[in-house]
Image 1 (cartoon, rainbow, N blue to C red):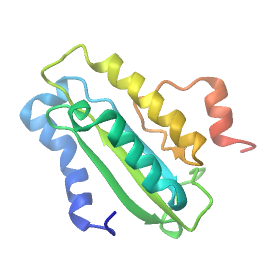
Image 2 (image 1 turned 135 degrees about the vertical axis):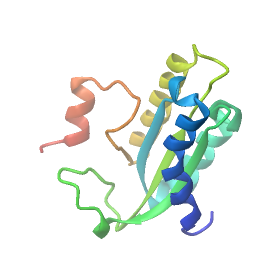
Image 3 (image 1 turned 45 degrees about the horizontal axis):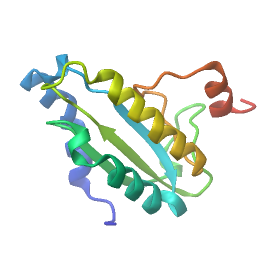
Image 4 (image 1 turned 90 degrees about the horizontal axis):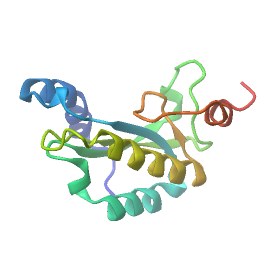
Length: 143
């Protein structure tokens, strides 16, 4: 694993505009973003990418992974793993060739999310991921 690469953030910011410009924004693009504890990052990211592979990300999809010092995050009620350093892991799926791919992408997101939670990580609630009342209760805990 490489240390923080500023080009990764540039690619992340360019994602939505690039999809809009190519017309792919109007096709399935079920994105998933999670925060992982440092101790589990290599194992979880490796397992997810080995299982899903890059083909499952679609034509314009990408996977992002970069460290975030927790003192930089000031979002109210943000849920983060316990360590001082967490890793953002995002799967940016996009598939203009398969307009029926949305439900498959969402099922894959659920599978990854469940693995992340089991490994001590948490979801970032902007995901293409249906959440039940029990999911939200587990996510926010006593808050």
